[in-house]
Length: 84
Image 1: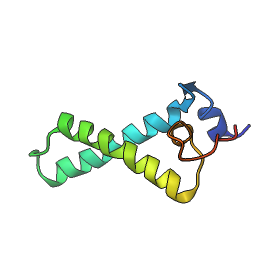
Image 2: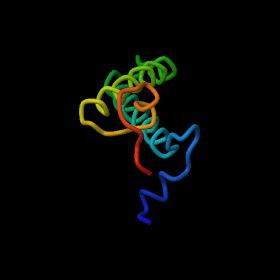
Image 3: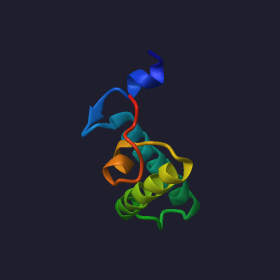
Image 4: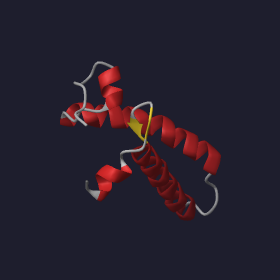
């Protein structure tokens, strides 16, 4: 079992927690860069909420476009059941 497979094995509602936490950390890094660029006029809470709201549809869209089977897209009837 590879390291990434082991990290992605922990699931909640059959969605890999590693992927969700990685996405949130990525959004927070982007917010930190933007906050540094705009010199403090950026609001963390609003940006994090907006980032999370935008990340979900983008993830669904890009999984559908690339033909990657994911559990969320399967539950939305956009892909086949992912092979585990």
